Image (cartoon, rainbow, N blue to C red; front, side):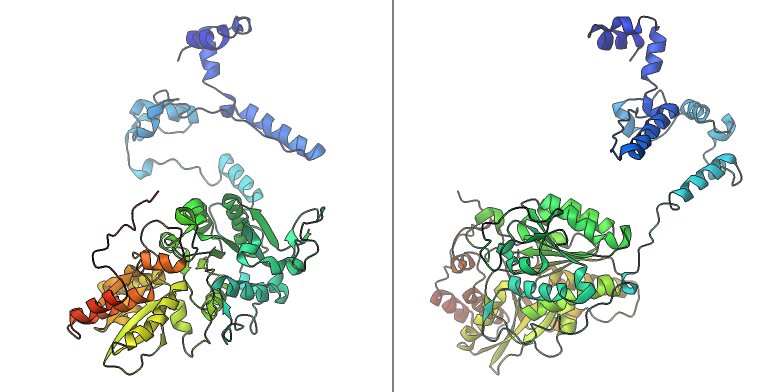
Length: 566
């Protein structure tokens, strides 16, 4: 640009030539190349005025600062190609030195060794000034000095997380309901409970949170100023300034920001709060994944509850809602531990362990836990399974005596299909050892860590997967996730490992139809197990094929799971 062009395009074009008539083209160009954002006096004046506004009336001020990319370097100034420049010429260096007042000679600039790096002397006026201002702002950055939550808050010990250990006594409930029961107990646990915050996107009743309204209240800064449509009901909307529930509406973007504020309050405010954000799982990692990564970078500690999870479990909502891949996406963030509990006691123990890690051991971790809306009778907690639940895999039940034995691994709502396959396989003389996989992601991380230690010559024990599944058995894994998720552990599973999962887009139909469509129902589990035994030569392949035909599974069925059906 030059002064004549600026005069024509900006001033003459808008009838303002008289305002710059007393300026030469050179003066006009210089004025435009020295915007206010590079003028120390103007910057000071703007901030001083903003401070004055705040002191007089508490009014917020917005300062618009105009700067130029590459300021003070003519070959860089305001050019779109500046990001492609990797080096500075001697002339550029000399001009920049002069502009910044750096006391280096031309000869020193020409040398590239570190000895010519200019650093302020400790006792120089500039260094003293910078240090004094930095101390006024609280010290040097970057630095991390988070409060030790373990020293501030006493964690609940008994009667909170064990409420589901006895099972549901035959009553059918979902893992979403199990989560609500545990959370309610947590929020009632004294001072600790008062620090638990619950954020809800969409409608709270979808997630079974409506029972919380009368007790914990929905947060509203000015209280409730209306009569709700359900005012005559026991579980009516109840708002209060000290409410612990944040009803975020259908705004996952807004909700995750609130969650981050709570999840980092232990450090930013030295007032720890423990946030639970519950939402339609499909609208979490793939919608606000960048914000979750930001939360991890800020050392957030809290829980993300992916509710109505499962490619076939949230039936009838088609492509948009049916989530079978968020656990895979969760694995991409190093700070996130993803879990897929099938039973109530698993849900409770996972949450308990998360609280212990975040607030008892001061670990900067985020727990992502799926919750399903399909009801089933929750079993009693077996003995000695705690370690396996947290590591990601444990044996739920032994196989009954039979001629042959297979392992079937279930997780989430599809655990019921694994259990129902037991009776089918019994008709073929096959016993089933049932395992529960609470986290394929954590299993894979452990296996990779053990493999690395071994590669580098360390004394590492076998991975948890190898300890549990390292023999030559037939293992069938079935879940409501993409097959890629259970396949994370494939390199460390011994024998034949067959994975059944829900690949492709969701569909709108009954759960039974969807599970047959995605080939994850009990019949497909049984046929897969028989196929594995036949592959190992333990039974004739005809047995597997006859079972396939008996259950109406077409051998020549076209695989259309990945296709979009209008």
